Amino acid sequence: MIRPAEEILDVVDENDEVIGQAPRAEVYARGLIHRCAFVLVRDADDRIFVHRRTPTKPLFPSLYDMFVGGVVGAGESYEEAALREAEEELGVSGLPAPEPLFRFLYDSGGVAGKWWSAVHQVRCVLPVNPQAEEVAWHAFLSEEELAARLGDWTWVPDGLDAYRRLREHRAG
Picture 1 (cartoon, rainbow, N blue to C red):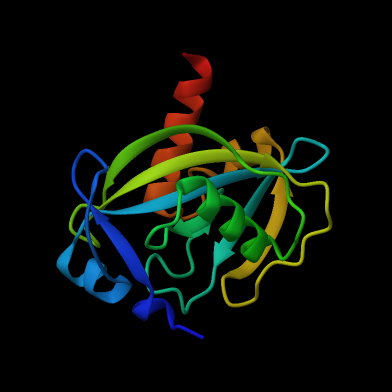
Picture 2 (tube, rainbow, N blue to C red; picture 1 turned 60 degrees about the vertical axis):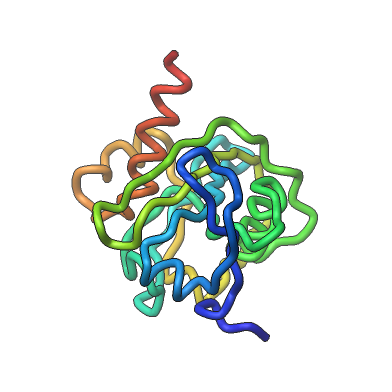
């Protein structure tokens, strides 16, 4: 099994065009632009899957997130990565294909460079068994419950930005 740091990613430019490939550790260390898939997961009751990342995550450990997802592997599409990551993190198989909503270029402010972020949504009616290596805690929260925790919990900054953009996208 390939360790996450050794995973090969496509390196892209400011226009999301592939310009090369590099191991994830090098992409992060050099601040190279890469791709990530974000998936907002809702259950049958329209609640949102929220989780706290494990303390062993290389980026944003122990922070809360309202998206599942991760880096897009070399040669992989955003949609393929969204489905793969959602099924892995939720611990399910047979999830419907996540619906793509929009993309944006996220700048981490020097933490790990920039990444193109493709936001998706999916409904999961399957019982979840989140991946222990990725998810330290989880719950399905209503929009109101999530909104009440936005100021109280420490969230991953890219997920928080994606969630703000998603609310604007829906309002627009």
